[in-house]
Length: 298
Image (cartoon, rainbow, N blue to C red; front, side, top):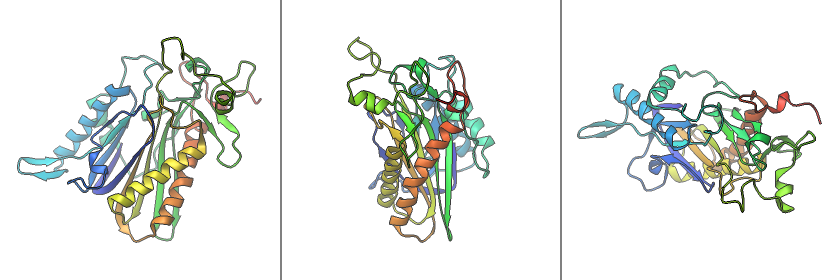
């Protein structure tokens, strides 16, 4: 949960073929509403979108939202990931959890690893969930003078997470003999995702990202920053943005600092890659799915 105490200009970039979202229209240029009040990210597939209702209730109680004749309406763009196959499928985010997350929100750096929306996250599902590796939440931050840019990623990718500098697989589809399969190369050589041709689609997957900055941006520029975040996603996940991924990148700008857009986008791309890597390196194994740090060295 990301609360914008004074509201923020928002942008969005949707690249995955299986996105699940709510209330993202104010993130697009031309919409009447110019600022958003929060971003809600959740697991639980479409059921998890209910968490946004708790965020709206929390903000409404505090008089936060877009002013209308009948009262303020909180603006809370939201996105979800599919994790119903990890743990109990009936245990998923609801309105009460969204409200509780707002109560617990602080200005401290967020927890990383298998927490929050990343609790059931996994990566590397070419051979199915049984051969995947645990994913989770990661973040990264940079300061350049008065400019601050940060990225938060919830990593639940179909593909493998790789080192952006070397391309080495850090977490992903596990091979039978140990180590990682290398999903992108395997698919290029004709290995199709588990279930193709058998009347069953691969398990839906998603990486959710929020890029945050104190730069002064309009919505068009914020969408450019979100697109740069998608570039960072491409550096760290292979294959990425598949038709069964629900990948979404949001951008938030509070508008306090004057900065060149090109500088913000350059920082955003690199930080998203770092945040995605931390999402798997800080993860811990759950429900029989190991984290990369728990696997023996190949």
